[in-house]
Length: 496
Ligand code: GLY
Ligand code: MN
Ligand code: MN
Image 1 (tube, rainbow, N blue to C red):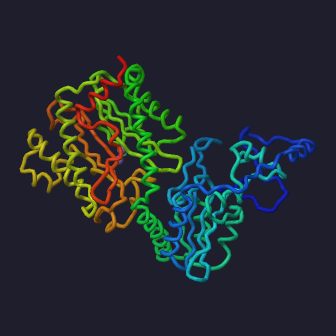
Image 2 (image 1 turned 90 degrees about the horizontal axis):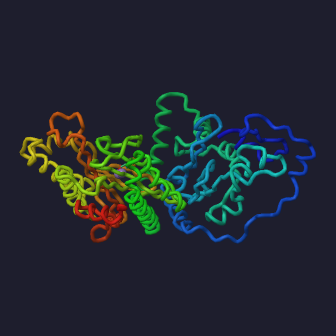
């Protein structure tokens, strides 16, 4: 958080630092005076709350009840420098957006004990730019550079929470001697203020403080494990947009053949952007043997006739819910016999995994079900020596399966990763949980333990699955899964 973003709230002094053009601009008194005047009142009044406001209120009440008597600090995060005076696109911290519905940069949600067992909750935000001191047009973060922000009263109405000027936050935090916890790692200045307030003098007290902060993050992740109906609807929107993006890619495959995997990546991204969304993680557009690299995001390889293309991509909604879907498709439109053999085994493993997703089943059940099918196939093909139980016990199939079969999905693509193990990794599935089921087989191009015809083949099939009261719903069922369905899909959409 720079001085520029948090100048003193009450000041007439210029607080801007004209940065976009590299050097300070001199401004005549006449121009400065003229720029202060002649602006219409654009304040919006009587705004309807955003639709998630009732949900965020409930989430705040739940986290308040979990930490009575403690101050909680949940920052949005700050813009990060990409190069010189340009920044990476901003994406608000997940827990902040979960509790506020806000996705702007530089804010912070603060729970302050109210003395009656609850909390006063205030959302500290960047206010509208000051017109009197020139910041709005001369400062690199002024509204004429970055766009109009909500005024504090507007934000309070929209989000259904009290708001305050974020420039007053450091003083507010320094007042009183309440025990404090922060969701660390998003705002270096706020982290430093919390450290200063604690004044930990030795390693032991620093470790205890770190535990306090990490417990806040764990509790928030625990709360996010089960999605409410509004969140499920957001995830379905993300998945549906992702399905449209995959369909676009299939239509564009012939052009990709003339360029590179980046054409695939760009085609998917175009769908996300034209619908006003983003992607939830770096798109993996992996053709040929690049598909054997799990997180291939360089996407600079060729797309060749005869190759398999593995596309792992997910649209993230404006409310920050993401899909995570993978399809592996033959660029030519038809699988070779060897490609089909690998694909069909992965598909069978996925079917077994999806069937094991149900309320009350252990989280690990779908992984075990998929891995068993893959191990059986690998033994049958003679790549692994049976019996299958021995293979599974020693995990030998992992030479070719490499990763776990899935993960929770939500606002983060690998959602709630820090939640308590007894609720998540060693817990049982509950209605409202959403997870991916994504088995894969990867035969590295230089793996001498497999026949030459398998080398360089990578297949993953990934779907997003909602746990329901009586079983599961495959949210990404709009895309084909079996090898025959994939070929029909390509035949229908590939231009002739
Ligand atoms: N896209 C990363 C994953 O599937 O987990
Ligand atoms: Mn994925
Ligand atoms: Mn995934």
